[in-house]
Length: 364
Image (cartoon, rainbow, N blue to C red; front, side, top):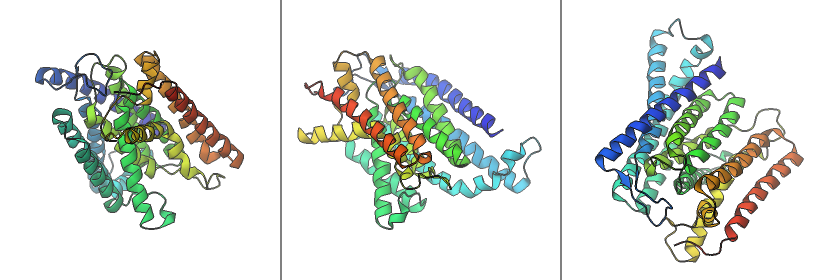
């Protein structure tokens, strides 16, 4: 029953995102909400924006509907048609409502800031401030933290750092058609497997929505893109994945992976993390603002090596899928298995680095 509901949730989010993206594209074309080719993109033609509105709506609307229905049914009783496997979780959803609203509120702030930036270019530092604000809200108000065993203030600082870095990683990935949405879908699927295995239905439900939203948008965004998500979409995808990666429990009682399963999110997101930090380092070395876009990303170097956008995107999809598979296995293997997973992840990152270093022309 739960598997069927999960499939329905993914399908509903996919449909909302698909229809929403089509409507957003028409609206963007009619109102002139267009992204023109810039120095940080390989796009050759002007492309409508606002795809991020469809992505956010596909996550926000079903979430609010579930929260409202749970509140009503908690007071009046579950309807007769609601399966008992779902009815038993009504109280849990009500209990999680304040946390859900904090997370959605953080997404809303980033979505609005992204929309404004897509239209008026707010600059990198104002966007960074909004990310830190959203991260602080979920860490200090929502009490969503990683490495709590390390105590305060390390846990809070590490959590804020993680949330901001992953949010930026997906914002940085939105540099060629289909990349950010596709990588987000792969990471959502891997996190969904971990959350489902741990019985975390609250987290799994949101990951189903995120997976469906990313796939629905990808129909229009896979190269050649008919619409872009803009910062209004990439910031939301990154923030949601960052939050859900912290909320997901990777260790289950009896598993031998208790000591190293905490590294599962790092393994899962190894490729986006490598791209983010390598680009920032390159920009700093060349004395450029690390937060200003350019063509130094892994995807851009693949394009300069002669790959088409589709081949470049699929190459990064495969690299991400391999690290995601390793992350899914990490909590369930012994020490030798963990070493092999880490070695595999390092190998993938080294391949990425070698492909990048093969092009010494840099970017402009």
